[in-house]
Image (cartoon, rainbow, N blue to C red):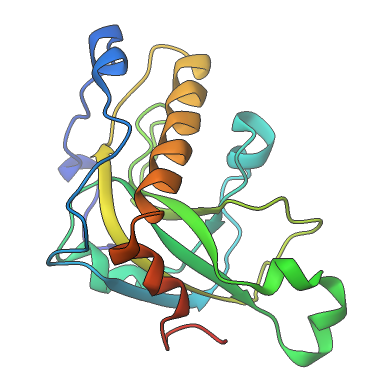
Length: 190
């Protein structure tokens, strides 16, 4: 990811009302197709802090080297799959049992054009209300499908609305048997 610079960044189209109204509630085939599944793992890094504070959607950033397998085969946009936080023994007490499970996630891969990022990022939102952060802790993820392209927005409210739709689309997609089985993949610490 670090090889791509801001000057090489493609322009993202703006989200429009017609796009928003035409969004499907279920995307992709009945089971993952190439290049999916894509397995990712790495320690969670500090990002910009905008996900939770500005958008109400806390995200965990993976380091560039952890997402390289994805960036070589996938375009920028929003994806869905499963993720798991795996703390070391000395930090286990910081987490409730449900926070250590394999959980549904959505992932943004791209430049976050609304914020005019200078670097591509991979940000994962695990769909669970964690009581604390998990910086420095290993996270494993399996990306199973593509939801939509990366877009720019004229307002923060429009971006938040699309993020909420992304979450609902991801949950519907993961309910299908061909996807649900990946919650028990050997990639995770079960």
